[in-house]
Image 1: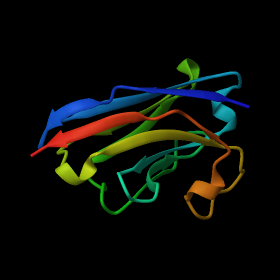
Image 2 (image 1 turned 90 degrees about the horizontal axis):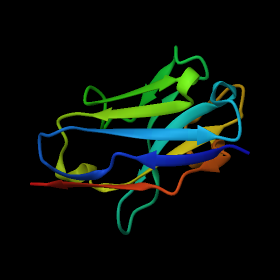
Image 3 (image 1 turned 45 degrees about the vertical axis):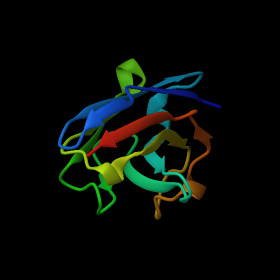
Length: 125
């Protein structure tokens, strides 16, 4: 099983930017499709962005399209989430997740096998 550790969260003003990183160990990251999810207080965990094993395919929730970019560096075993034009509604704990599925038809929580501990992102208005 792959171990995932997120970093890069923090407090930022609305309109600002943050870049989250997810470092993987224990397995070769290129064997996994990767995703970012988030969970705000009192809400369910929701999909934010996903990326295929090769990095060619990327997928986004409508709420972040045009503002967030997911990328991966398989040589460094790291996945990134660049977040621009942040809004107060982006405030949440952000989780990195890995999936062994060869094909993901629905980028939902159930498609992912391994999870990081999360990193807090707080956007002040």
